[in-house]
Image (cartoon, rainbow, N blue to C red; front, side, top):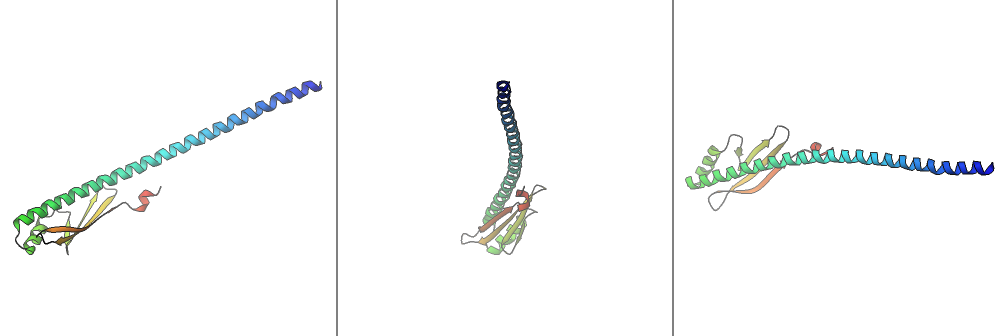
Amino acid sequence: MRNESNTSAGIGAPSLLMVLVVLSLGILSALTVMNARSEQRLSERSTAVSSAVYALYAEAEETVATLDTIAAECEAKAATEQEYMSLFQEMLPGDVTFRENMVYFTVTDGVRSVECTLQAVYGDEQRLIWKSRRLSAVTEEEWSY
């Protein structure tokens, strides 16, 4: 009888150990899948924010290109700096502000916005030169998840 009780205990322990190993592997795989889904949602959100900001930057660059075109037209029409500046100010789009040699405008998509500041200098070439240019967007709250 002693032999019979030893063999039954020897058979049950490896089976129990195997069940625990399989159970722990199952739990680890479930945790891995949950983490992967979380990372995917985070990357999708980050991609959406980045795409929206780049679209706003592209729109801001189009506005700067429009300002360059206006500056070139003013160069052809004006003879003096004062004529040039007044003509430039008259030709600006409605959403662009020009004061004290600074050009300001904001591009928005309703959720986020890009604020643009251009420092204009009337150069030796008898036209406006963008001495400095700053485009800023997205507050830190939008990037914190």
